[in-house]
Structures are given as structure tokens and as C-alpha cells.
Length: 210
Image (cartoon, one colour):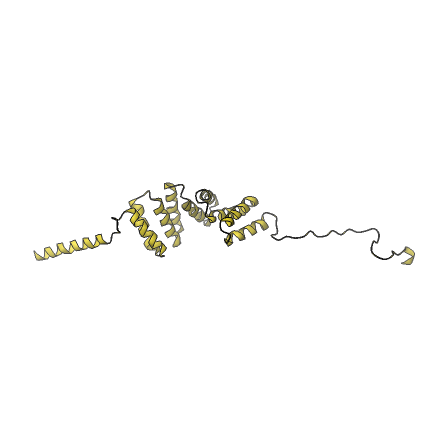
């Protein structure tokens, strides 16, 4: 009988200990999301992935949790899983500009420029303060040989972040490679014409003085 009571007490203690590991607030999707953000900020990406995954299980319509999951996957170079998470966030909330931007960038890295352009253009509408979508669009248009669209996008990126070195380099390359400019000002070379008569100083020689 005593053994049975001890086992019951031990079991109850384990259950209580397990309950104490739940996040404050009853373990809601928001609780797991906040823990995921904290873990991500601390650089604990595996823990962040676990927390965000639980948040999305509890609330499958939690767009920010899917976005956070995408960030954590991307931080661990798991682009395929990251893209899937970003696209889930976009399906739930198409106006999620950050998810649109990150999806477009991953598509760009995968050289899928069609979907990359689609998501990056949406990002410029829903996250207009982010210079990266403009930069990557500039790169797409530069590779397509489109001078004016490329230059326009690079300049927009630099207007938002004048220190974005990739955009500065992209602008120079576009102007040099597809816009017909050398990237440096050059003066026109003087033209030389042959004269039929000597027009320099002094007296011209006559044929019998040669």
C-alpha cells in the first residue's frame, strides 16, 4: 500500500513539474511566439524554431509566428523550410511586407527571378521603408538589360539607405554595362583637319625655294 502511495505521489510530482515548465499565461500561441522571438534575438535558433513551430500549431493563422519561423530557418541556412514558412505567412496575410521581401530574396538566391520579382514588387508596396526589395529588383532588371528600371530601383534603395554598398555597386554596373555610360566623365577629343595650305607662323615657302 505504501509503495502504491509513493508511486502516486511521485507521478503527481512529475505532472506538477511538467506544468511548471509551461510559459506564463497558460502556454498560448502568443506565449510561444514571444519565447521564440527572445530565443531568436539571443541567437538560439534551434530553440526559436521549436517555439515558433508550437505557436503555429496552436494558431495556424498566426502570420507573424510563421514569419519568425522563416527567419529562424533562414538563420540556420535552411532556405527551403524558410521559404515555406514565409509563403505560409503570406497566404495568411498577403500584406505582410517583411515576408514578401524575404520570400523574394530567397527566390532570387535560387535564381527564380519571376517569382522573386513578384514578391519583391509586393514588398515595395507593403514595406516601402525597406531598401533591400528595391536593390534586388535593380539587380533583376540589370541582368535583364533594362537600364532605366534598374537605375530607378538602385536609386530608390540608396535614397532609403545611402550606405547600402551593394546598391552603389549595382548602380555603377548598370550605368556602365547597360546604360552606355563609362561611369566617369570624359571630355570630347579635339578634331584635327588637314589643311591644304600651311597656316602656321612665318612665311610659306614657294616651290622654287624647296
